Image 1 (cartoon, chains in turn red, cyan):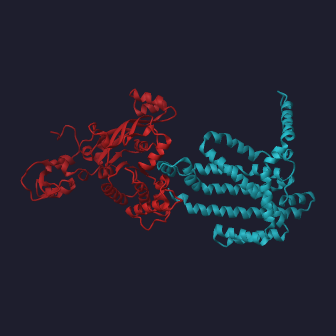
Image 2: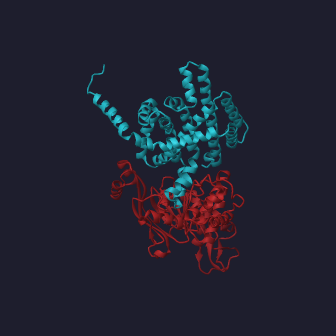
Image 3: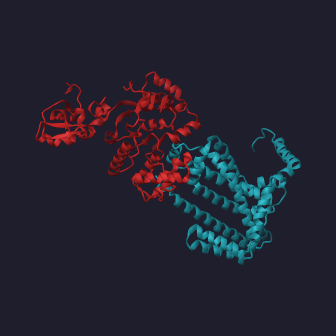
Length: 350
Length: 289
């Protein structure tokens, strides 16, 4: 897939990562390697296959979303990156360092300095104030008190929780608590942030606001974010790339549009059917590039399909402009309909 | 009758002989080892008896107020302590209190580390749990007699018997408290690169403090339950009054001294419980999920 990429561009590289839960994972692993499925292995050995030969390349500065239903192994996957879970087999390279070869002391230093994590259940320390929670990672790192409190106050302000510094986590709403969790991770200023279903426990409006905030923060900070979710809409909204996980195996990996337009199998097709494709697909992916006669309506190439739909009431096609405002191509109603229609193999591919 | 399968007399003799051997050869060493315990107990007792009654009342009443911030508990404590004074039980009550405090302090020193150890290893728990069961259910006279043989009658065997009886709930509740800390919080702490001791002192112990305090409460209560038995082997105090009341068939003496024990139990139970509740509210354990 992305073999051409230089290793230096990769923040996280996973190769053949397999995790089997049980007393004797090696024998179950041998069985899995003979080509048995997850269910067969479970029936024969009573071992649960958490991850099955997962390989991922996560480039620097991306929001990489791993999407899957509950039980697909996505939470197991993210915990391998900071080795909260040890894999049964495979290789995990972060910033050129093999995470699995680290000693306990190296691993602690790696967790303190290189990866921060945000949790679905927040994982805040209930006996500490908000500011002490945000400063927790820095405290573990050994940053002096005055300095870490100053940092923490800055991040509390960034996530919009000023005034709550001395509150206890339980006094905050779910959305506010997750902002504390986010600030706690950001305060560490690591290049990589792991987010395990970070917004899943929040109600829809707050979730949407948090997603916008995350995209905004990522733009300004340029972090590599590995984001886990079961919500395809959320994945489409924030992702630079998406990997779909099922039964511990990667089903498809690619840009959001690729997955929406060309779902690799029925399982993904089922997800795609549920999403609002008009919002998921950008005009730039379906436009015809080239010089066309100027149209009275134009949209920027970053617009989404739903933005051009109103114009088709008047016109058969709409111009597409680049950042400078020059027209670089057009998008026709036919193309849009083709993109929005349910993917049917053999139809509309020519 | 159950048929005699093997002759158990040699076993019994072996146990009796080995105890005698220990008493003969190691008695002094044991006594020296337990000397710090005696020092602790005597120190607490001296302080309590030397302190004027009104100061002790003032301290306990204000502690009760600090624990609840309401007037009810301080009044209960005041009335209880006045009862002890009026019934001429003050000095005995101080002696009993000293025994209870010394036993509780010693139990805390041994039990909390043991509970921590149990919470971290299933194997340790497998070994310690039956031992704790044994300590709680074995009739105390069974181990009282050997301790008296080794240390001679007096305060040391009384204190040791009290500790043996009173320590198990604290060990159990420490173990339980540490293990029931929200795993999500523990995992988050781990993800930030904490060392095991940072997790123990920064997360586990603070979050299980209400449970540990419940254990301390249980230990004080069980220590008070032992005072009559302890007084049989040389500890004075309210237990001794009860014993004398029984011996002389003076029902009133036994009754008042008995009530004195109850009163002490109420005072310490309510105060430690209130501190536990206060702590729980501060942490807000139930609401964090």
